[in-house]
Amino acid sequence: MSKTATALDVTSLTKVFHERGNKSVKAVDNVSFHVRQGEVLGLLGPNGAGKTTTIKCILGLMRPNAGDIKVFGESVEAHYPRILKNMSAVLEGSRNLYWRLTVWENILFFAGLHGVTSRDNKAHFEHLVRLFSLEDKRDVEVRKLSQGMKQKTSVVCALARRTPLVFLDEPTLGLDVETSLELRAVLKQMASEENRTIIVSSHNMDVIQDVCKRVIILSQGRIVADDHVSDLVSLFETKAYRITLLEPVPEGLQEALASRFRGATVTGDGTTTEVKVNLLENDDIYVLMDILRDRGAIIDEISHEETDLEKAFLEIVRRERNNHESR
Amino acid sequence: MNLGSVFVAVLQRDWAMMKRYIVNTVSSLVSIYIIFLLIFLGFKSLSGYAATGALEGTMEGTVIGFFVWTFTVMAFSDLAWNLVIEAQAGTLEQLYLTPSGFKWVSGCTLLSSLTLNFIPIVVLLVTMMATTGQWLNLDFISLIPLLLVTVLGAYGVGFALGGLALIFKRIQAIFQIFQFVFVGFLVIPQRVPWAKLLPLSMGNSLIYDVMVDGTRLWELPIGSILTALIVGAAYLAIGVTIFSVCENIAKERGLLGHY
Image 1 (tube, rainbow over the protein chains, first blue to last red):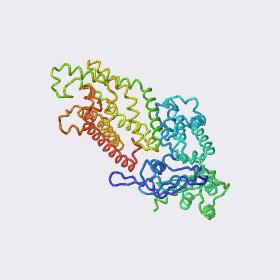
Image 2: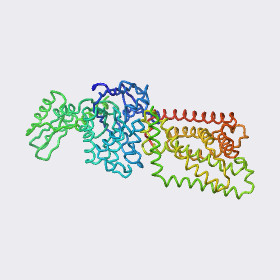
Image 3: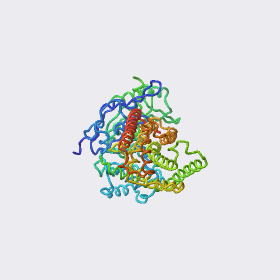
Image 4: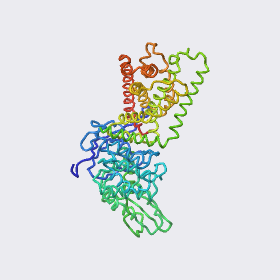
């Protein structure tokens, strides 16, 4: 397989859950995307956006209502469960493990299910244990480990299966900042060392920004953005502005801005005013200046807002929700 | 499908679990022995117990019936209860990610359970024989194939209930009821015409012939062996079919990871 071969191809994936009283919820709505081999993709979205449902449909743990899923060119539906030899996943973090077994016993078990035996892969298992700093805990029962170590063991068990496609659903959920940073660093290192395709789902922006090159943002079951993380951040970097005024909040400014720029904020401390606004269209800067001039605002400073993926994400999701409500 | 490595992985897991839960393993065997002791003492105190018709009214029959019941309940539990426990613990979806398919993982779990439970159950049987003073014929060459044929029906029930557990989750009460239903299957005398069509019943009767009369496997009526095999296989097939239907519904509704 060449480096640019498609590892995963999802076309028009739709999953509807039927609830009592003939109510139905479209958890995944006509989602299409593809992932190249060796790519590290982030699936980002608020709770209930459809990230886990998408992953579970790909893994065959849920049956989609419509759509086609291909893994390395083979249809998941037609080749299930044999196709699972190409896929592994961390789905519920530490809950994916046998807590009464040791770290090593868990690795041997889950790898063994994939036909990856310790006889031929012991060095690889030991490498993973070292990579995730679990050497001292190798023979310790999982129940005696910290939450962070349990989570790392889960990831090791998924990676020990040596599958070319790995799904990590909320891999840092419930971890403290230090352990989360540690896990992210290892994932990054691993992604650059091994030519595996990794799909990381999270609602934690830092994880995605840190580990993934490309991100798909899901909201209400639909893809609302699919771009490289750096492009997405820079897109918003050029459009997020902060304006400082040398006066208390001018009368009517807040209303005028709110009616023209969604999400604009105006705060004042009695002597100065700070305006934060996202300018989405090319001529928005002129409209903004007109509004400020009409109110006789005295501008002290105009600067680009520091933007990260979190701000980009919030703006995209907010816009999508507004569009959805206005439809 | 690499079933060999799946079986080795499952056997290693179950062996490690057995060692780690050794107190639980031993206490469950002791509990079963105590139940047997109560039944034995109760029957002994009833002068006319032989007239009950249970297991044709013999103490040998009681020992054999209890032995087969223990074997069956362990096999059934390892399938149905484990499925609930795996769902509760969060490991069920991981087992579903096995390339050979979840049903084969379950099959390997059953085989591993048989392997690991066989010696403790035989120890229990010898203890029961010593308690009653009824020394039975332990011809393992004849017994093991008959035990396997007999538990097929229990596996069928286990698969069916396991499938229902995937959808309805908390159905442990039904599991407990079935442990007693199995007693019913074992005590119904073979002279009842439709008894042959019940799970366990025919196999239990053949095991009785081996252990009490000393009949060898190849000396048993071929028609009876085939009946036991066909009935067991039919129950297994029905159980696996029900499991598959329930599994599809669970996947449709996204219930595999729920508990």
